[in-house]
Length: 304
Image 1 (cartoon, rainbow, N blue to C red):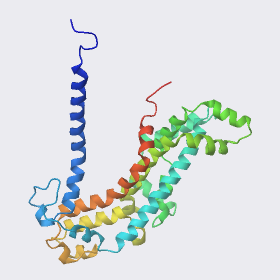
Image 2 (cartoon, rainbow, N blue to C red; image 1 turned 120 degrees about the horizontal axis):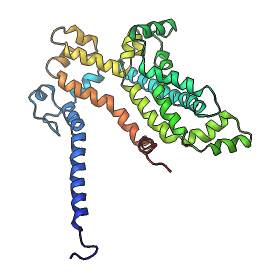
Image 3 (cartoon, one colour; image 1 turned 90 degrees about the vertical axis):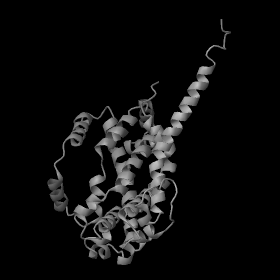
Image 4 (cartoon, helix red, strand yellow; image 1 turned 30 degrees about the vertical axis):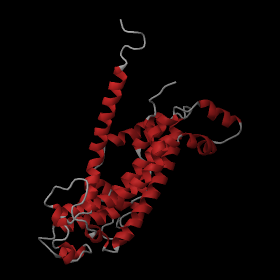
């Protein structure tokens, strides 16, 4: 008979070893595509066509990034994207949180019908053409506010924040009202700070969405170069690279010289460089939100 405390002593060690190996494999599978993309972005375009590039460039070059930044429009487009992302995120978080607070109060008799209206918008969409005519009717075409106003309220974010606010004790609001605090002060000084984990999670989703989108620029502001965003400029650059063999004039239209596009870069290399340039700002922002992001994802996971 095995001694007490000795039986099964190898099982935790076996589990920890298998778990560690599994997590290492998962990390490698997750990280490898991005590391490979970075390696391809710093590799010579013609050499990349041969394949065989994994974690390290075979022929180092900065020509792929020079092709991206050779046009002065990229820098202005970067500033437009930053302004758009910051304003969209701040307004979406603040206004959506205010609406979520109102709909989370049990004394508000219309909270259920209004919540239902917002939920229905997640299932039914008018379509691209009606939305375009709505934007045109509001006078937002070729305006910077076309990036901001349509995204100020999000139904999905509303549900997430409202659910998180529902976990806050009602006694906090009641005691604040007994001390003479109004609803706006209660929201700003009590509820808003308590919801930082959920707000940070939603803020990351909104920021990534605002940063990565380019289709709205194509639809509503393509005729205004000063409103062009970074993603839209990178999309045009990639399209011009893909079509450079059939129409060299497209290359010049994107700000690239014919020498730059004639054999020194390829669609594979420029695509990798564009991916790195587009993803880098978000990667720098994420570490500052990671603590709140992890907590926000665990909302509702522990019940007391």
